[in-house]
Amino acid sequence: MKRAFVAGILCFLGVALGGPGAVQAQGLPQVQLSEGHGNLRALTPGTEAQVWRAVGRLDSGVSFCSATLIRENLVLTAAHCVYHPATSRAFEPADLTFLAGLRNGRAEAIRGVRRIMILPDYRPEAGPDFEMIGRDVALLELAMPISMASITPISVAQTAWREGRVTVVSYGRDREDYASIEEGCEILERQDSVRSLSCEVVSGASGSPVLRVNQGRAEVVAVISASAQSGDDDVSLAVTLDDHLSTLMAQYQGGAVRATGGGLSLLNRGGDARSDIGARFIRP
Image 1 (cartoon, rainbow, N blue to C red):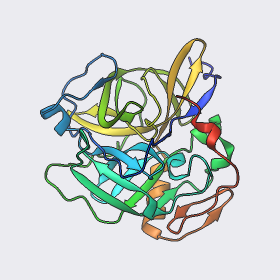
Image 2 (image 1 turned 45 degrees about the vertical axis):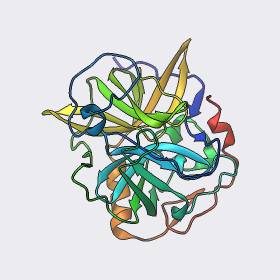
Image 3 (image 1 turned 180 degrees about the vertical axis):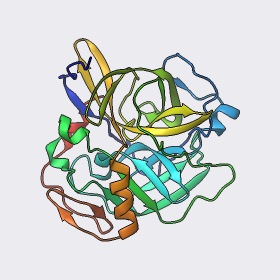
Image 4 (image 1 turned 180 degrees about the horizontal axis):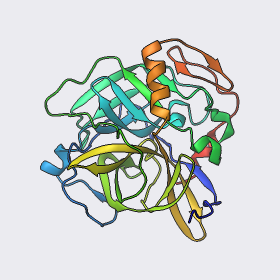
């Protein structure tokens, strides 16, 4: 039976950087090595860290999120990550940097962004409400592809995500320079394209991939958007990719810029968000 969805305090999970300079990224799985059931932990050096190199850090110079390389030239993240956390203005693509495989200050690959695609009906000024959580996904075209044998893009699931435990790989507050992993996350509730998960997330985890294993290979089924409170429990909220990715891919392939409401369906010259979104980033 479908349960009533969590009606707690919603908080987007962007985080402001403490100082200037580029930040870098790490982590992502081509293959999930095991179906663990532990808590959030840092990826260990060596093989485990190597297989998660497509998960990286998306840096704007003033804030950061997590993101995933899904093709050599395409990165998946949360839509609110492409807006300035203090002014609510849309970032220029040139403001954003994707750092793949970041570990201890060293990235396996660093790329700028050429274009930003968001859903036409996404409105950043709406804040972290349930409707916008369900549209909080963005696709970024990199300025140059990442064509390296050491970094394999993680494919997006071709079938809908209905059940089963999942894995989240993310960067976050107090662990900005290395990726962490949580395996065995459970679906707690579901409504439309939003899933409430048992995963532990902190600031910076927005845009993190939610992954399931299909025939031994990891695939992206959703993107972390926000945290929420369900009673006394903190939960994470993720938006599934079922229909959203096809819309974003159509924008990418068409290449046209079209203003829609409070945002742009495709941002390649920047744009304005009409109200302050700083209150979204209230989770420490």
